Every structure is written in structure tokens, then in C-alpha cells.
Image 1 (cartoon, one colour):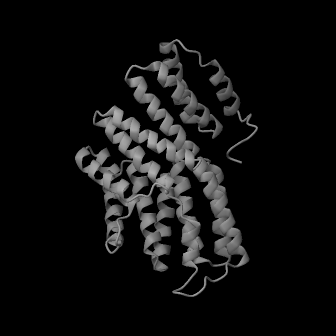
Image 2 (cartoon, rainbow, N blue to C red):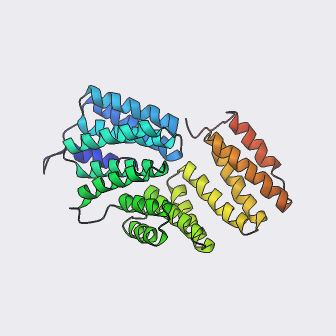
Image 3 (cartoon, rainbow, N blue to C red):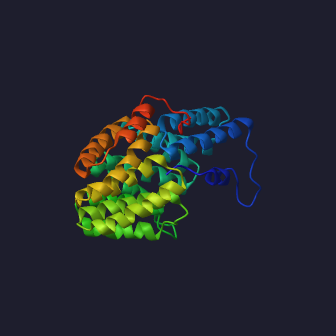
Amino acid sequence: MIGSYALLLCACAGGGAAPNPLPPDGIAGMNELIKGNERYQRGCYPRALEHFFKAHERFTASDHMAGIAMSMNNIGNAYRAVGDLESALLFYEEACLSYSALQNPDGALQSLSNKAAALIDAERFDAAEHELARAEKISGGSPRPFGPLLRNQGVLLFKKGDFPRARSFLDAALKNTEPHDSPEFAAVNFALGNLMLKTGSPVEAIRYFETALSADRSSSYYRGTADDLAAIGSIHYGKGDAHLAVGFFKRAVKIYALIQDRPKVDAMRDLLLEASQKAGLSSELTEFFVERWSRGDILENPCR
């Protein structure tokens, strides 16, 4: 996930010495990273990308290497989120090289894990396995397994159809992820929900998706919240309960509209209309808000 403020502060210190004060450009870069992280967590990826680039410029001007590495990793995350895979891969690799030069294995591991996840999204499995192997070499000396790496290994096995091994890795990822790490905790539970659904356990899948929903809501991750709602609604719809599914679809499509995710809005609108017709329910008022927000008529835009 996104690099943390604490990680950068640690990178500024050496041994037991007091942290070196950040120069003005470094402070400004940190402020831009924080703004970018806030927007990334809301699912406002284009705005997040703007702030991450501003942060990178500030850190570059002051030759703040730890900040440069972190901003490149975050730029990679934003590019991955908007579907620009090749740009994401370039930034992840450069971030990994920068972290390695700083002798920061945690940062290098995070960048490689993110790179592997992007390749898994694109179903470039051989390349993903190569990056996971690089990450495993770095994590070998760690006293505790790295949760995101375990999750990515589990997701890769899931996509390759090896469900028992996927379950083993995802269970290990969940065990090594603290609930207070809301973004990662949500991601692991969402992956387990998909696995349970694929292996014919819809009731258990709902339980994992509900846990992911709680975590995403606690961190105000709007895109993730909408995805969780859509997943739960789809399970109910698949079980023949269109009436219950409609409520989840309405909540999901309104969030997608607020964060201006047009492809998700279009897909969810079609599903909502179909489910509403089957349930004999009206989605007219939801359509009113979706139409209004989709054209940008938003009074409290979460992506500002």
C-alpha cells in the first residue's frame, strides 16, 4: 500500500541520533504526500497522482532520497489504480532501486510487492512470479513474514486455479496483518472473500467481504467500500435474493458516482436496473443522484 509518514521519518535518522530536520522543500514534499495519500485512500486517483508528482518535485529539489523513493512508489500505486500498467511498473522498479541504494529493505520489499500485484492484475503471471522471487530474497532475513507479499502470492495462486495453496497463503497473510492496518486488512479479507465465492462457500465469502467493508469504511477508502458492497450484493443476487441485492447495489453505485468512476458506474447501473426489475423495486431516486453526480454536480466532492 501507500508508504507511511513514519517510514520516511525513520529514513531521515541514523542509528540512535535525533532525526535530521527536513529542509523546507522536504516539509513541503511531505505535505504533498499526505494530501496524495488522503485522496488515494478515497479512491480519487487522478488527484492523488497530482500530489505525488508535486511531492516528487519537492523531494528532488532538495535531493531528499528517502522522499524521492517513497514518492515514486506512490506514483506507481496511482498509475496502477488508473490502469496505466507500464508506467506503474517503471515507477515501482525505480522506487525499489532507490530504496536498495538507501539500504532500506522494507521499502524495497514494498515496491517489489506492489510491482508483483500490478503484474498479477494484468495476468502476467510469469513476470509476477519473478518479482515475488526477488521480494522473497529480501524478506528472507525478516523475523516476521511480510503480509502483502503473502497476499500477492495467494492471489496469484488463486488466479492460476490452485485454490488450496491460495487459501494457505491468504490465511497466513491474514495472520500477519494487524486489523488496525485497515487498507491491508481489507485487501486480505476481500481476497479471501473472492476465494470462498469461487470455491462454493458464499456464506463464508459474505463474512470476509463484510470484514473488508468495515475496514474500508474505517479508513474512508471509498472505492474499496463500493467494491465490498457490490461483491456482497452480487452474492445475494446470485442466491436469488434480488430484493436484498438492490440495497447493496444502490449504495455501491452512488459511491462510484461520487468518485467519478465511470466504468464502475455503468456496470453497476445495469446490474441495479436488472435486480430492481426482478425485485419489483424502484431505483429512480438512486438514478437521480447518480445522474447528478456523474455529470460533476457535486456539492461536497470527496476528490477535491
